[in-house]
Amino acid sequence: DVKVTQSSRYLVKRTGEKVFLECVQDMDHENMFWYRQDPGLGLRLIYFSYDVKMKEKGDIPEGYSVSREKKERFSLILESASTNQTSMYLCASSLTLAGTDTQYFGPGTRLTVL
Amino acid sequence: GENVEQHPSTLSVQEGDSAVIKCTYSDSASNYFPWYKQELGKGPQLIIDIRSNVGEKKDQRIAVTLNKTAKHFSLHITETQPEDSAVYFCAASKGFQKLVFGTGTRLLVSP
Image 1 (cartoon, chains in turn green, yellow):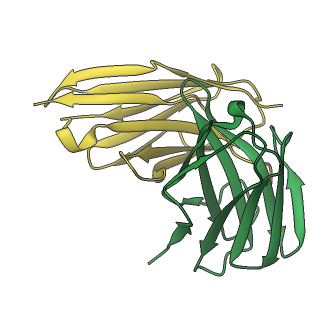
Image 2 (cartoon, helix red, strand yellow; image 1 turned 180 degrees about the horizontal axis):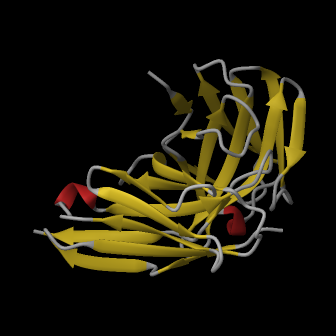
Image 3 (cartoon, one colour; image 1 turned 180 degrees about the vertical axis):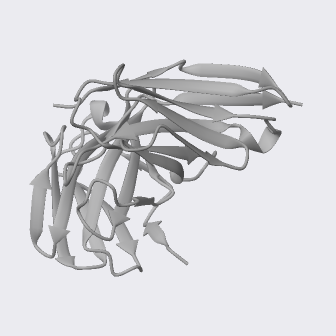
């Protein structure tokens, strides 16, 4: 069965802290995504990766960076957390980069920045 | 780039009623339109999708219709049940372009 896991369900950090959100998929998928979910704004793509060490900016990359050192793992990094980064963060993976490929989502990490 | 609008933002129905959620897209070249369901505490999960060469697709109590001329597509849920309560997202994409999601609809089905 397809599985995407995220390291934390809830996270509370202080302004200025460096924050790491981890995502692991067990499906040998090529592509992994990080989205941010906010009420009234839907899912917005932050970054995606189509191969190990490869990354592409999504629609809202400012204030974020990513790392993909292994195929199964994709990390989202907030270099200096700010209160406007309080949000739900969703990781997803898909077999290929085709827009028609099903994306499989993790359960999300609700991040609060104080 | 593509822009997807979704309405309504919230929808309350009685159990057994039908529910309809509508989305419009801006890029006439988009050719793939999936719907994702997000239950409480979980990530979104694909429930049905439609491609631009098809006008309607059904899967038991859910169906999706596509009007390419008007650039809108809709999700229809018949005989709603409490377990249909969730947030639903529509999306659109073309070729190898990324999925663009709508803003979501919170559906509440009351017993």
